[in-house]
Length: 71
Image (cartoon, rainbow, N blue to C red; front, side, top):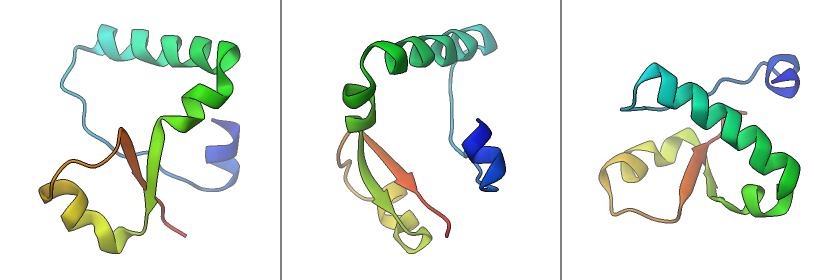
């Protein structure tokens, strides 16, 4: 969170779960990062520019987790 704030980054996504499920997932991700940092980092299988948004949202699914980076 510190890096996100200091680098003026934003996290945008969609979640179709309850607020409690979302809070639990945040907690679990923190635990995963402590135990298996390399494995967690490997879940992000693609980093893309905003120009790729249409294909990422409407095209065939690719990878586990894709991230759009704003530079």
